Image (cartoon, rainbow, N blue to C red):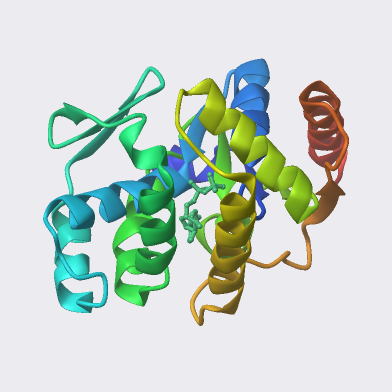
Length: 225
Ligand code: CDP
């Protein structure tokens, strides 16, 4: 257990659809590291709340759901209370609800230890909004990935189409702006670049180029005293 706290962490934060998820997964694969999709935890809480028709403003009930939630991540699949929800947690209703439950301090606190438990040798790549600032402040490398809102909406549109889900670019862009604003304005662990993070604008950059850059930055971070 003690050793886990020394396993290296690469923290990748940034706004919605900045490419964090794809890039973080590939970097983890290349290095043979574990992977934490922290957004999926907030999405699980949101889905559980929606399924049980809990009012998203009912803070106590949402915190209760978070503490009791039985979620599992296994070979790229996500499970909630024994049911496969890999696609269900990605729809836009859940996205919006996730950003609302994520603003609740009790929810964030309840998920903190769960996230830290992903840190195991040989290392972890963690993707989210507050990986570098709050969950793993001692991460070896902190990256803040961005891209223009239009490019991010295009990426999300493509992702949804590939999954056979319906979407409108205009609605996506609007929802993304609302979610960014809520994530950035909240009092607890807001979306922001922390001082020691390296910012990388991925607008127009192919995924492989971003992955290569991160691997170079990680190699450099390991050599630094
Ligand atoms: O896929 P996308 O980047 O759009 O979202 P996500 O990473 O799955 O996160 C969904 C929502 O959870 C975000 O809009 C945030 O409000 C929240 N979140 C958070 O507050 N902190 C994290 N570490 C990760 C996600």
